[in-house]
Each structure stands twice: as structure tokens, then as C-alpha cells.
Length: 545
Image (cartoon, rainbow, N blue to C red):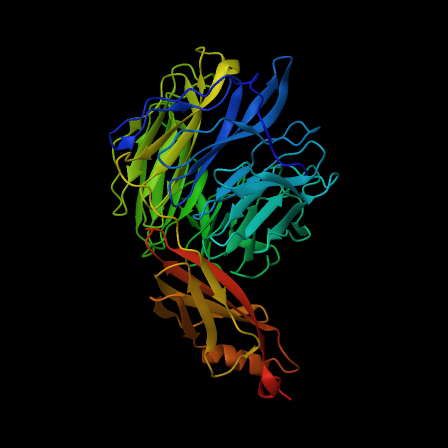
């Protein structure tokens, strides 16, 4: 595939940016696109570099023909000119997912008219290149993507036949051959989630009813077979999120008479808790919080017929908070971003109108303690359809479509606002981290060994899982400090006796391997996680011979 080409000067004469503000908080919005731009998605990395991806109408003569464009902003700077992502000769490309890792790696899911599965990938600040994951004629619809800290990625899609497929991107950048996960998807694209260490989940709803489906991938592993979650599939699709511990939250229809949103939690070691109900309305997004809490962002109708945005949380101890109504003034289309410190930023369209007549974009923040701020409007009137991304340094980006002519959606241009302190120095990039796992190593009483290397001084926490057949057990965690050049530390992770007993019980041999995850914190506020796969030998004593 050819690399991205710049948008010609005849399409956009200039990018209108607002004057810089010296006040911390939401900065004045900037206009990123020409008229005829919609469906924007955003991402942000640990430094505060931001990305916006959106549909752009290709020509006034063909109002149904769109291309995909992107613009980016380095922390503290101005937005770039838009870049065209559509490969030559293809139309109908649309964003189905934008994933930005903490170190700034970008992966964008595309929609191709020829049925190919494609992504655009690269680093923030440079035009990404389009890669083909599945060839033309693969019946690929919108491609959903997720990425971890190390650059591994998952792409998943379905098409007119309802078959759900997925592919994995390895650390060397190569994509695996697509794998079929399930059939009879209900038409909504599958949802993909991935945590910093590489644990991932793909979820979808079946057209023939039944339970919500989920395929799980442990760190450094492969996507497993489709599982039936203990929650009915929702008519309008399924949401999924995964936390830093690898627990996955999948949503669906209600379980029992209470509430109208159902959810279930899958343990990182396998197995589900009971299905539960929480809140009411239509779930727009699920959040798996670092505390173990499950939060749901939902839209619903008030008794007087107005739309409302609500937020409900079930804490790890079982206590339910909410649902809290964030806005009942005909509010719709909520989106939220979660930091790994536990804070939440939410955005939605206030005074919702299908043609954006008078509607505005609002934001609110929930602290890690659970306290919500008052809603703040950050757009001009006639704005609609916002998306949000945030990082652990407290920076965020929100983008939306704004009608330059009131009531005329053909005049809509993408605008974006960033949350930052202009006087604050740009945060340093997260530390580059690598994990070496000497092989072969034996599944026995001797701890597993790994060497973690950072680009500079860092504090390291290592943990992992040992897999025997289809079962998994946690390795005993270890910690170290890489204080001196070359900033390398050796860690040892003990194998639990239960894993060794399981290997001995599988007479004739057992497939065993371990995932070793190192999380390093350097000068930046955001730790970086990297996982590696370690094949294990069993030895004669463990083969039952």
C-alpha cells in the first residue's frame, strides 16, 4: 500500500486555530477540517500529543462519498494540516476505531469498499501508513482496533455474512493471518479492548440471540475461542473493557428484573462472575477501573421524554453508586475516558438536536474519589458528536463537528479543544522498556528468570501467569530498581505449586508457557508495561514418564 498523501491546498486553505491561552484548563477550540466533516475519534499519548480522525466529504458533487482524514497536535503546539488516509482508488473509508498507546504509537481501523481489512499505523506527529490485514474480498466491514504499551495490537471486524474475524500485530510489526472467532454477529462491529500489558478481549452480539460472546487473549498469548458470557446479548450491541489486572467487563441486556443494563466480569485466570444489572438506558461505554470497579456510561429517557446522560458504578466490594445523572437537558451521545489513576472525564452533546441546531458540547470530571464536577460547555452552539481521550498527566482532547451554518450539517467542520496547562513543561516520554526471558526454562521449583532493561533509571514491578493446557496461575510478583547504566535489573518469579501439580497430572506431556509482564515507572507519570512469552519445558519428572 502507498503511504498517506497530504491533502491538497485547494481543499483546505488554512487551519483556523484559536490564540493560545495562558490559563490552565480547556483551551479555546481549533478548527481542523474543511466543511463536510463528521464522526470524529480522538487519541492522546502520555506526553499529551493528540490525534483526531474523521470522515471528510470527498466532493459536493458526490455527497455520499467520503474519505478519512487525520490531524495531530504535539503537546503545547498547534494542530497540523489534515492528512488524507484514503488509499488511492478506494472510497467509503471511515473510522471504526482509533488507538493511541502511551508511547505514541497510532493504529486506526479503516472501512474499505472492496472488503479488505486495513489499518493505518505509525507514530504521532508523522503521517501513518496504510497496511492490509486481510485482502480485498474478505467481507471486512468496519475494523475495530486496540493497542498495548509495547505496540502489539488487535484488529477485529465482521461483514455482511456476520462472521467475526480478528488478527494480531506482533512486536515486530507483522500482522498474523486473520482468525475466525465466531459467526452470526448481529451487524454491529465487534468491540476490541486491550490493557497496557497486552491482555485483550473481543466482544460481539449474535444475531440469533443468546449470550454475549467474548474471545480473550492473555498477555503475550493468542486469542482464545469464543466464550458465552453470563449476560444476554444486547439488541444494539455489546461493550467490553479490560482493566490493568486483565479482568474483562462485558455488557449486554439486563440480568433479572432490576435495571436495563446487564454486565459480567471475566477473571484474568478464566471464568466469569454472575451476571448482574446496573442502571438503566442504553449503554454507550463500559469502563473497567483500576480499583476493580465497573462503570457504565449510558443514555436514557427521562419521564418528560428528554434524553439524559447517566453514569453508574459498581465498586469491587459490591456497593453500587448511582446512576448519577450528569445532564438531563436533552443530553445524548456520551463518551468517557479513564485514567489509570482512577479519574474519569466525560463528554456529551447538550440540548441534543439531530441537525445540531443550538446543541453544544459539555464535559465533566469525576475524581478518583467518585466526586463529579459541574458540567462545563466547551463549544460554540450548533455542535454535535464529541469524543474524548485523556492521559495520566491530566491532559485531554475532545473533538466534535460544528455547523458553520446553523442547521446545515453539510457545513459541519471538525473542531477540537485540549485540556492542559500551557505554562507547564511538556512531560517526558515514558521510558523505553524491554524484557528478555532466557529460554529454555523448566516448569519446576526454581523461579522463572527475566531481565528488564529501561532507557534510564526506573522502578520495576514484574508479574505474570503460567499456563498449563487451558488453565492459568499467577506467578509470584517481584520488584527491582534499575538505577545504573545500562539500567537493567534481574527479576525472579516463583511458580505456584498448583501449576507444577497440574503439569504432573497431565500424563503424556502438557503444553506449558508463561507470560512475564514488567511495568516500569521512570520520570514520566505514566508507567509502561511490556509482556513477553516464555515457552516452558516440563522435564521427565513432569511428563509422567
